[in-house]
Length: 122
Image (tube, rainbow, N blue to C red; front, side, top):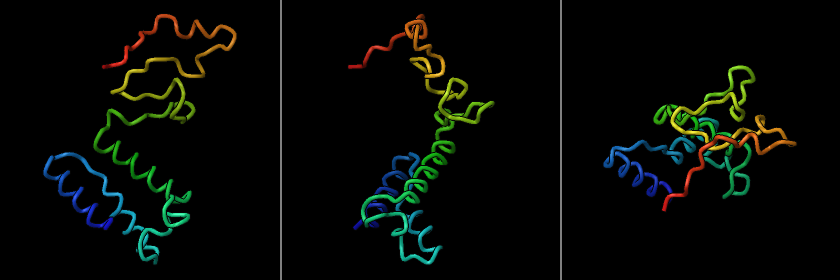
């Protein structure tokens, strides 16, 4: 039934004209290219992702974000190459707090001075 569900999702995405990542189809295709009969190699117990499965999903999601939502793609720090420090950027998302490398543990309050606090939306 998973294939039918995936097909229905593809059709709805086309109908609504929204980006869609058909993870089912690309996993089956990748699995069959390696001689597997489907996406079993991406699962550790028939249900949960293996390390290879997690890596595959992460790459596919990141590629989709970079292609369909480039403003949400994280650009790594140009010096360190890391996507998770104060040098990394995400054009369409405003940072609401300091990165860990901007906080002095002895004077942590200073890192938050002058930052706007976003109120939760209701």
